[in-house]
Length: 317
Image 1 (spheres, rainbow, N blue to C red):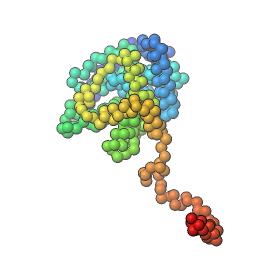
Image 2: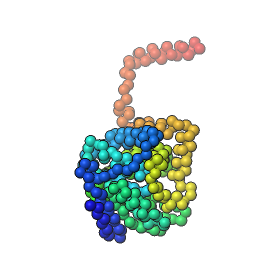
Image 3: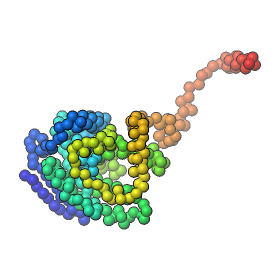
């Protein structure tokens, strides 16, 4: 029986939807899928890439409760959709629950996500917390909202993951997001780092996973269009011009058009790091190289004879 629960915690409202139980599946997720061959080829590709990411980084284990952070954008819809499909066919048991943080942005369509999730009988929570006003207040004039907004959003979602007993927090970042973050840190942060596919949160209380780590954004755009997800635009960030991330994304898209294999090579580089070929003294012990050096211990006479031969050849020239 469907249960709808409302309660207040720390100046926020949480609405929860618990789906009709199904003894075989855990819950009845039976969306109407497109039937075109284009869709099934794309679905097969994305499922393969997500499956490889989950396997390569041991993202999901038997008995996990995966909290999928869903914003209403194409990425989080795709992530939720694919994980629910895996739940139906995986040889292990894990639960999936969708969680949306309603940040009280002006004109935010509050009915879109609940309607979609309930129509597909997907368990979810909606957290209502006015981080929009806080972000506007704390962001200096002329600066972008991203840093403050993301910090508040992470704090709210990660704390809630603990409340509901989630063992993993799934985020919708894809391959292009990871590369964009790498270049943002390279160009503006002076560091070589990106978004890892799996991460322990700074407070060491949550394991964060990014199952779309191998998936290209252009494939997610196509998939979302074919699945006709009810996309909710992010006006909070989109209203600001000249965002550095937007500029980096434009650069990556232009590279993808002109040099189709370049992004694949860049992402491969993030998985093929050679610490000894960089200059981070914390990452690699350059001082120990002297002690590891192997000297060719030839006799002094042998070395003298070799040098004499070299000198004679120079004299002949």
